[in-house]
Image (cartoon, rainbow, N blue to C red; front, top):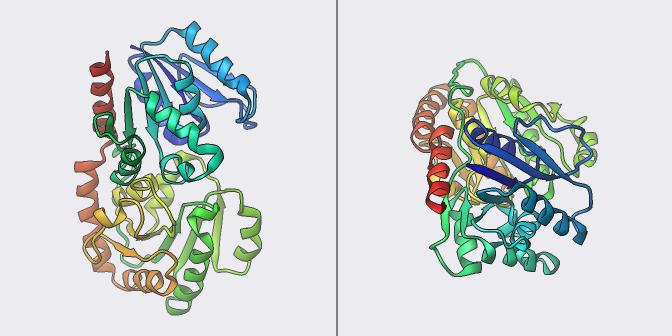
Length: 342
């Protein structure tokens, strides 16, 4: 197959998706020309859009690229912008993958609503990474015929289960955007540290509010690692015991949470997205109310103090990931959908 993707080339989700299909297909990637230097993505050719998100020139540029490439399938990741530009080409078959905010938040914003609607109505096939975002898509286009749930999946050869009885490491990987509610996590750190002084806190990620967060981190007992290379994530999860997400919204399940579960790290997460459908308190982690500092802190403290429970949960979660979130299986499902379109 000749596949053409419209997606953010900086994203690890894009990289993992397109490089899987580049193994046995001719793959082209159309992406914004972000100020991050040359992208490290192994595809047949990367085509850059030199204009801003709001420029109509990108729409014209995408049309020219797609016409020249002549793909078998055009696939846009993220309904807003990339999905909109793809729909405007009138090329078919056209696939749109929704990542969360594009169908949960953007349809409620006046200037973005139309972009999302054009993308979804123009698609022949829509994929979501979880039930929550799939329901949001159904509310917009009022049909289930086009919608398929395809998780991003976890590379089980890279993420391994570990267990250290004496370790008490908490890891936060969501970054510094308002939707991730990082300020609540900082409050949790203060409470947990008082109760478990030996606890170690790792923070990974960047974001639009990272400069606001840095002075606050200087006063907390945390180790800020910044934006690490994706290849280092298994290493840091391999030394961690509890994964915390204080996010206010999820499209389905955060990939970082699933990677933590594959590594035997116990999740403490908020009741958003598909978290409550997946995590059962005391069985495979903890689900807490958004913004409830005391609830999140109690869950983290209880897990840090009970090494046997962490080990049991870690083993349970690894089996669940192997059954439900294997990267090779998930991408194989997508391959079958492509072939069905053709």
